[in-house]
Image 1: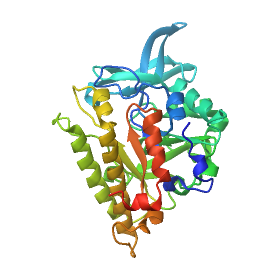
Image 2: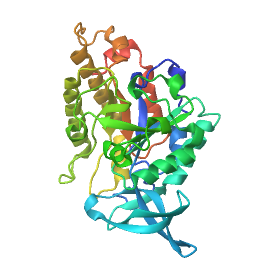
Image 3: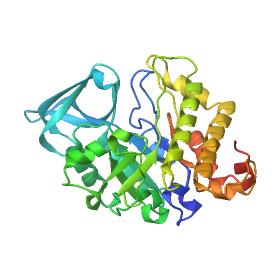
Image 4: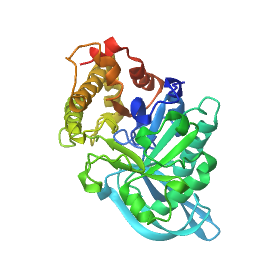
Length: 361
């Protein structure tokens, strides 16, 4: 199994490179919708440490007494394809009747249930192989935030992280055996201050997104601050990988403005489209020549961080750059169809020698 704790208990989160799962809960649906084929436990065992989750409430078709039953589930759909209505339902995740925002999809797909995903996360960090590891659950573009928070707190129990503080600089020994729950700004706003870090609900902020907090990094921010964005043009179905490389390289160039090596960089090795099979495109992205391109793109991100933050930057190609680069890296590589091999490629980025790092560009 991929192990990150062995990199050093004193390593900060922003000093390691790890895999993230894009649309982590979507293990079914049409070929242009499905993004994963392993459940959360299996993805964690493969090496994923951050899970991208979008959650909505869907009616199951069953009944609890006289009440219709609904369940919080992962979904993948454009907002234009969603029909949201306020309904009274017996919500399985909290075990009672609640007034919820019920969602019906006219396209896209629902995925795994939230409760089962939380149980998987809990099982991993309580297991012999995962007891030293950590997991980050990043909730974005969700509905029914209050109920999602309650489900996370109740299901994860003692494994939910309540340490608070700036996650970017939190050491692995403090995250050991914990599941970190991260809500977007809109999610935290909907909670209205009723639940927060002391309960195990923390916030993430994407410093790329000016609309949700601006681009300034704050050492005192409680939660995770990252910079990155995925997605390729849906209007252009050709040369998806080239589109992604160009976009990610541009984003890394833009990260210069942040002026802090403590920011967690997020790089997407994914592509999006409307009609094409995500898996077929993804398989091609992981062919040997394209894995080299992934590493070159990642290495370019290291160079951007160094040249921006280090006033004594060394010449390109100098082996002395290697040790410094460990502090200026895109930390999270987001992937579709996570598996052992992909995660091992990403884990190996932590083990590159100084000479290898110096030759990455």
